[in-house]
Length: 130
Image (tube, rainbow, N blue to C red; front, side, top):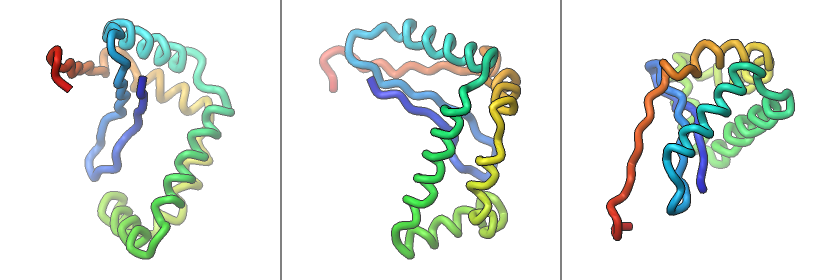
């Protein structure tokens, strides 16, 4: 099973997505229930500091990893200029994530990661098709 999620950098507000590509035979309702259960736990208890640090580390790795060449660094500067309105924000980008607290995440989760704010879409292949 492949699981991922996150947000995309866009000019306009965007959505937080959770994607699951299960192995064959797994009931989609079971996956949806597991996701809802985990989001409920996050809304109620928040995340552990270790999990928040792991997320910050992944953001750091992605930020530095996307600057391996001059062309990639230039593209990233341009992205910050277009999406954030100022290329200089790239230099404080990681600092903003490092300032996020576990309590803030719990409060924001309770506010935004609710069932009434969710949309579920299923893409189920026809039998016999790849």
